[in-house]
Amino acid sequence: MPHTVSLIDRLRIERLVWALDQQIYDLPRRSRIDTRREVRANLVAAAGDVGATEALRRIGGSRQLAESYLTAELGEGPRHSWVAAATFGAGVPLVVIGLLGEAASAYQQGITAGNPNVTGTYSWSGISYLQTAVTFTFDHGQGSQVGGALTPLTYVLWLLGTIACGRLWRLLPQWRARHRREAVAE
Image 1 (tube, helix red, strand yellow):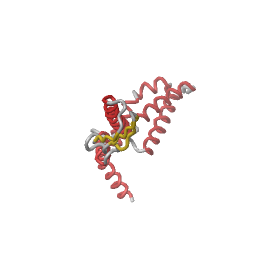
Image 2: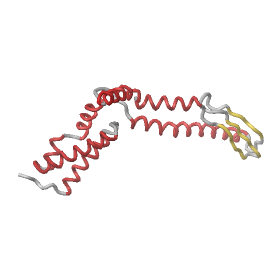
Image 3: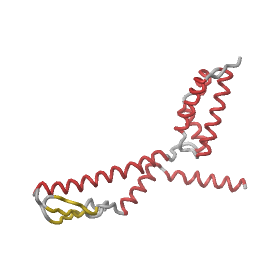
């Protein structure tokens, strides 16, 4: 006996498809799009046959479904994670620049705490290897600073940390295998 698929049923199906899409974000774009379309079409067809509630119950949770798609496409075991790499890559500069700025500000406040009407030039070497020296110029207690840029080592550590956090080296075997399959197909 066919069931009518109401707007509420379609919204419930779309919610599962959206949740699935968020969990398979490490798949290539084309594969994610194809997976979304396939799951949506299958759920709408199943909802017409057995009802949306039963179709969603039979499919299980989006997490289990996502894991099966990820395993089929990327294999078993630990995988790379673009989300983890992006989070590390975007978050670390915010933290590092904030900490280095606060350290320079603390040094400047330490100088003015000792002598509120200080005049002269002071240099702080910064945090070794992570930033360049900072020069503070004071005129009757009013200070300005120059320097404190990130060093090349900081950028190298940032890049290596992003690769390590996202386990991006795990992409190489998949990339090689995909290109081998494409070469064989031609």
